[in-house]
Image 1 (cartoon, rainbow, N blue to C red):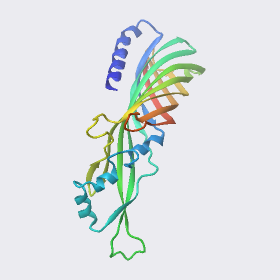
Image 2: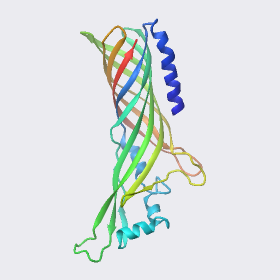
Image 3: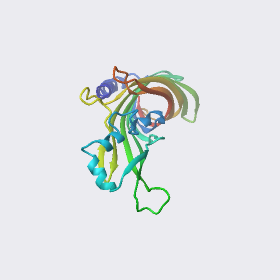
Image 4: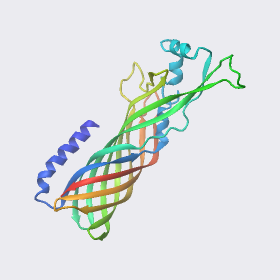
Length: 269
């Protein structure tokens, strides 16, 4: 992912010199928010169906079990793992490069990267014999996930109206994405315990994968000066996201879903 971004930045810099002589070329920087489809967020739940070394594994591990025994004091049991994890809206940054064929059509390529985060809770029942309640007391503990995601969009932008210097456009693009899980952990008694997704002793590669799809949306741009354009857009893309690549050890985990981005761009050209 870093190599892709570095190559993209080099391309932007190299084009900047050309843009001074060719008014058809534009480039710029993107800043906005990304709302990812929640279907793949369940990957961070800590369940054994998604992680070989999840929450239940940690609770039974001889290195960690004494910590939990000391904390709960009484017999305890995990009664519920996260069921409906969702991604938080995340900051998205990147760059764009394109060519204006004429006033009605642009060709563009953009790359945006963000750090996605999820948070939910799992529930433990503490079988306290001194409890006066009909049911044993329950305690919730947080589960966290962090994921790096790169989205590359390439396609066309069609002008649909122009009024008082404001240009409205409709983008149509293909999407390529790359996902890498950065971290997954839960917290009990202010101590963090990692949820491990790679196959220990076989591979150290962090889970993730690549996907593809397409999208559209709408946008507006306004020329602030001869060289600078303010550009704002909303994009929706329906794409496949791969969290686990297929191997001889476990099947692929991927989902198709609708994702959303709101972007503000500063363009030169």
